[in-house]
Amino acid sequence: MTSAARPEAINSRLVFHVYAAAALPLGIVTYLWPLLPPLNQSTPNWIVRMRVTAAVITALGCCASAFASVDEPLGRRRGLIGFAHAHLMLGAMLGIQAWAQYDSAVVPSPLVSWAAFIVGAVLLYLAITAQGITRHPVFGRFRGDPGSPRGATFVVRNKPALRNLRSQYETEIRNAARQEERARLARDLHDAVKQQLFVIQTAGATAQARFDTDAPGARAALEQVRTAAREAMTEMEAMLDQLQSAPISNAGLVALLRKQCEAIGFRTGASVRFEPGALPDDRVLDPGGRQAIARVAQEALSNVARHARARNVEMALGLIEGSLVLTIRDDGSGFAPGDQPRGMGMANLAARAADVGGSLDVSSNPGQGTTVRFGVPCSGPLSAWPYMVRAAIWIGVLIAARAVMITHNPVAMPLALMVMLIAAIAAIRYGRAAYDLTRRPA
Picture (cartoon, rainbow, N blue to C red):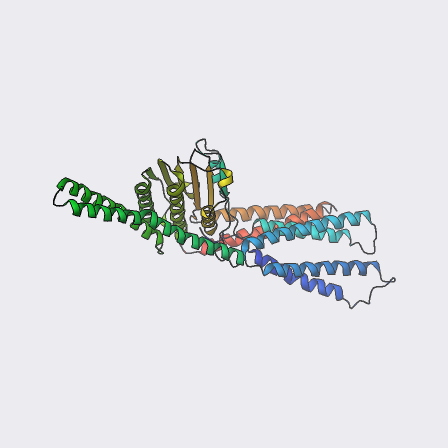
C-alpha cells in the first residue's frame, strides 16, 4: 500500500477549507452587522462581546486558510491537531473567565466558550481520523523477540506514505538518498565485479603461461577462471535486477532475493540462507512495496558485506498480521548506539519505509550481530459490511445523544451536542465508504 487512502479517510485540507469558508464570512458579517457604531463607554455590553467574538472567529478563519495551503499531508495533519488544541484551550480559558466574571463587558458568554470547546473536540476527532493514518501492530511484537539483539536500536514506526513530497527539505533528502545509492552501486561494482574480473585476468594469464609446461596447473587456473566468471555473472544479474524499473511480481521478488543472497555469499564467504514464507496475492501488494523490499534487502546485505564480517546470514520473507515482512539477521560485529547515526545507510532504509507507508526496526549489539525488519502493509480487498456496521453504531450514538439533549440539562446539553456532531460526521463517513465499496467494480 502506498499513498492510497482508506475509503473512510477524511482529507485534512478539506477540513481547513470548510472551516475557513464558514468562519471568515461569519466573523466579518458578525463584526459589521448591523453596521454598529464605534465602541464607546455607552456601547452595550453585548455589542462588545459580539465584536470580540467576531474578531477571534475571523482570526481563526485566516489561520485555517493558511493551513489549507500546506502541501505536505503529515504536516497538515499535525497543524489540524494543533488547531484543535487551540480551540479546546480557548474554550477552557473563556469558560474560566466567564465563570469568574471579571468584566462582563468584554468576556464572551459561556455559550461562546462551549462553542469553542465543541468545535475543538470535533476538529480533534477529524485530525485523529485524517487521511493517511495507518497502524502496524506487527513491530510491537518484534521488539519482544528473545533472540533479537537489544543494544542499539533504530526504529521507524509506520509513517504515512508521502509520495507527493514537495517541501525543500524532503526533496533534499531524496536527492541525498539517490546520490548515496549511486555511490553504493559504485562500491558494489568495485568490491565484487572488479575484483572477480581481476581474478579472471590473473588466472587466465597463469593458464596461458603454464599451458605447455604444467598442464595440471593450467587446468586449475582455468577452473578458477570459470568459478570467478560464474560469481561475476551472478553479481551482475543481481545488480541489474536491482536496477530494473519495471514492477516485479512475488515470484520475481523471491528470485531477486535469492540472487542477492547468493551474491553476498560469494563476496563475503559467509553462509547465507533464505527462507521465503507465505506471500500475499500479487493484487493486494503494491508493486512499489515489492521494489522497496528489494532495495532494503540490497542495502542491508551491502552493509553486512562492508561492515559486519558475519559468518552466518539469515533472510526471511513472509506475511505477518497483514504485512509482508522482510527479516535479515547476521552474527557479525554489530554496532553500538553511538555508531548508529553515521553514514546514509539508515537514512536510506528510513526513506524506503516512509515512501511505502512501511515500518522499519533495526536492532543490534556490539559483537552480537544485527537484525533488520522491514514491513510493508498489504491492502486486501475491502468489504462494505464493516463500514455499514460502524455507520449503524454511530447512528445509534447520535440518537442517544439527541435523547440526552431533550432532558434540557444545562451541563449535559453542550456535551450531548458535541457527541451528536461527532456521531453525525462518523456516520456520514462510514456510510459514504460503504456506498462507495458497494459500487466499486470487483
